[in-house]
Length: 241
Image (cartoon, rainbow, N blue to C red; front, side, top):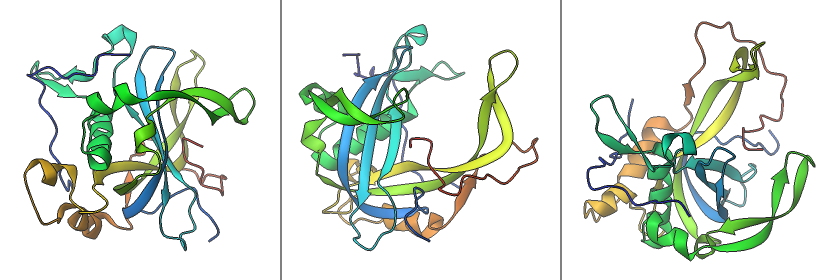
């Protein structure tokens, strides 16, 4: 198990509002969800990720379960650390670490460092790139979170698809796709975001404010140097499908 303990000099990020048929894409907004699965996995390069799958509790919702991945440590080449160092030589948690930590606190009231050690190896249905379908696979599952409710803030993003160039390096193409990112988490019962909980706030406001600002919006992360072409992927499959 990788070291997930942040050094005392790591500066944690603050919450900020910033600047037909079933769909695999969720519109930007705040949703009440149930956690279907949470796993911890390691990449071939040694980076550790927390993978989540949540479903919308609204029975009338016509969206498939949402999946997201939070990278909580760097790979072996960068020391497998849960933080990065900025140009001012100050440490900050990896964005994925912050998200996974907020998830754990919103659901269990405990940080990532206390939830992960309680996980168990389980055989679950997981996507196999070789078989091109879900097959029974052993995964490290954060079992205490399965089936628990959590409120999430989801952002719809537009990005460029990538492919390998002649040198075998992935680069942006003009074709674009839509995907989702879970930005923030809140306790399902109180509605309090993790930041509000940490600040001792008793009346929830952050998630509502976030929803009012971002609901229905799309964040454009496409390469402006490329002329976009219309994708032929009518299912709008997310990058985690």
